[in-house]
Length: 333
Image (tube, rainbow, N blue to C red):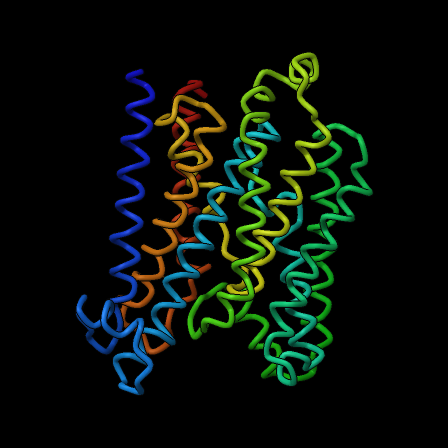
């Protein structure tokens, strides 16, 4: 019971942190706005500058920060539980790179200029194609087969993205591609929220549906089969949920890494190493981390705003160096 109370206390703390950071994200900007402005202007339809800033710029950015961070944390925890690999994250099955390739093609061909929503739609299409490819390549094979198929797809999509950059003879398009690949939620609107949210929420439902099976799979695939777990169905839920939700996030934000890798590592000791308990905790912590990083991006003064993907990489890189040093000290090598 004490362990369960500790878990609920942790979830409560993380939920409170998300609420505080979300509110702060709406408040932070070059134009000052108070809490009263937030609650009075969200429902208004006037043309006041403060109302427009909150409704059209800050609120969509904060919502996307919450949704994307939660998705990356949830997907990372689910994949680590299913693959039984603490180094697994959404990029390991090629979702991020496939979605990025779809968006890059939209920029390269000029479709994003003709139809603004072509970029996120093609990115989502790329992630959906990954689901079909993974199911075809992996078939009824083992977890190792799924990982190898994901690595192959990720490498191919990465190579094709580099090829597009190499062939682009328009320096402005090349620069736009590079900036988009760095990851950002700047200048996003409610149209992006409404486009991505249905896919993200659908992905969440699929990932959460695999929670019970993940606990049993932690004992091994053979044990899970003997206990009646449908391993093939679980893999379909995990792969589809990750591809749909992370693909939708990549479609509107570009590539943002390390959150799906770092967050589960930080929280796993706090939830008693239960894969199912790690899901909600990682979602809340992922949302907190991304909102915090986005606030940091806006606070740090610079002539050019830092890209969100750069900030998360700067956080994630040192963290894994710390993990390596800790493991080295633990094993005495």
